[in-house]
Image (cartoon, rainbow, N blue to C red; front, top):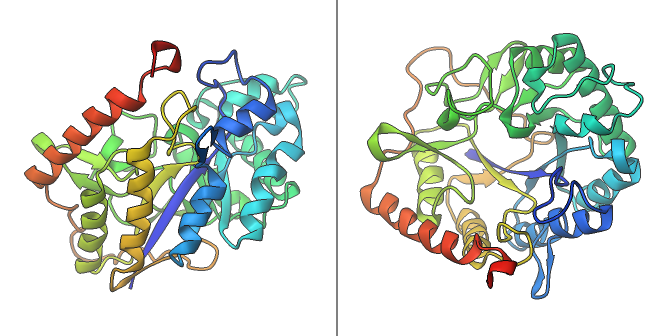
Amino acid sequence: MTVVYITIDTEYAFRLPGADGPATRAENFARSIACDTPRGAVGTSHQMDVLDANGLKGVFFVDPMPALLWGTEAIADVVVPIVARGHDVQLHCHTEWLEYDRGGDICGGRTGRNLKDFSPGDQLRILAWARATLMAAGAPPPVAFRAGNYGASDSTLDALATLGLRYDSSHCPALSGVGACAISLGREALEPQLHHGVVEMPAACIASFRGRLRHGQITALSLRELLAAVRHARDEGLPSVTLVSHSFELLSRDRRRINRLVARRFARFCKGIAGMEGVRTGTFSADPPATAPDQGPSAAPLPHGRLRGAARVVEQVLANAVYSRSLRAGA
């Protein structure tokens, strides 16, 4: 069976939309993790409700770096409910939070937006601190990692291997050459493979307009495209497919309202996966990913479908018109 990894980057906002800096922890938690709105919450608890209702498992990549500002309790408030409900907690890391390492204990006060901006030694120190903090917050020892902004390098993978993390999911082929990732894999690296001592788990992608690739994120693809991508992976005999979401992804851009289009898409996608033959969801802890065979060409992404693509563009135009406006602008 093809294993679908539904991965959710779970993080406080370093720059909270509409607020000065990270704002208070309570406000940040409400708008980034719980995703509270006057019409209900659509954050991690809601996402787990949807997964549980369909008998699915999720992988929550949790960023422990905000503990530099608010302490380990802020991370425990995120981690403990996920672990209690039987979903996977793995390691995420946004290095912007090093601004709050006032004593310079981790890497001498050096800061940067992405892990790749740091020396190999600093990356090892940052990841060691993040790993220890995540475990202190109640997570089992992590086995997998994704860099914030996908901003990893080969040195990141070397550090992960040193720390005993076996899997990385920072390579996004659809953003190769244009995103923050500096791992030495290109847009043709679509399947899990051993690279610098860890198994690299690329984020899924599909072919799009003008030969481009579109990344497999809940907000980036339509429901039809998401389900078609999973069916394509199954039909091609791929061992796994990795999809991306965020704890706050079912909200409007200002994080104050439910994005009904994306919330429905997530719910219908989970229902579709639950009813799809030949696939199941998995976690990095319980379902170790398999690497691609050494022989033969890499599988091609889902071919571009003009009708699917056009429908997605129309849907995104509508979503942006409705859910990207600020409340102050009258939304």
